[in-house]
Length: 143
Image 1 (cartoon, one colour):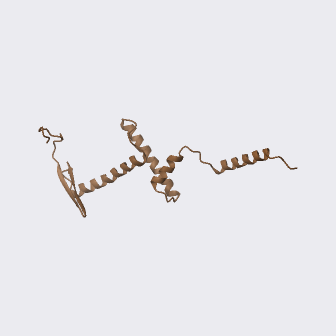
Image 2: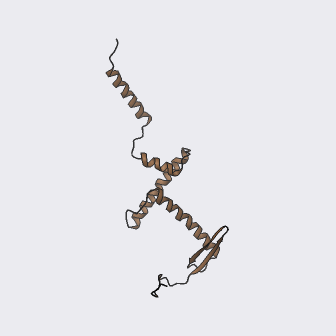
Image 3: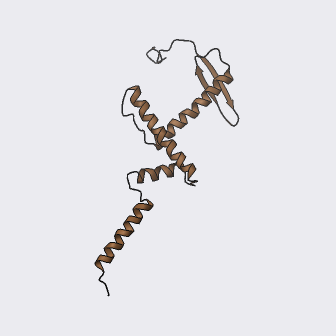
């Protein structure tokens, strides 16, 4: 309760306190409204949820989702799915190229070169041929 006597949290249903002992670390304490599951099941659910939380934290940090561009469920879903697709494409490229770079380094390269034209072998050949033609035109013939 607050000093004024009012409750801070207006949740009025029954809660259960679950404490999980961790070797070498402070115990974790959870409050849950799941009164049927065992403490082990609840701890496992929180552990799985923590992995999801860490993934979305990483997603926000590395794929630059600072805020959502829309407020509707569809807008948020599209933005998250676009970020996930970007992540998966970069990870796929990283694995197929047997790159030693970390995901973070690969994303930096993608960000820096995203809108640069990649010179293909054919475009390099055309450029060399054009350069030779220009040089041949500018250079006088000896015979």
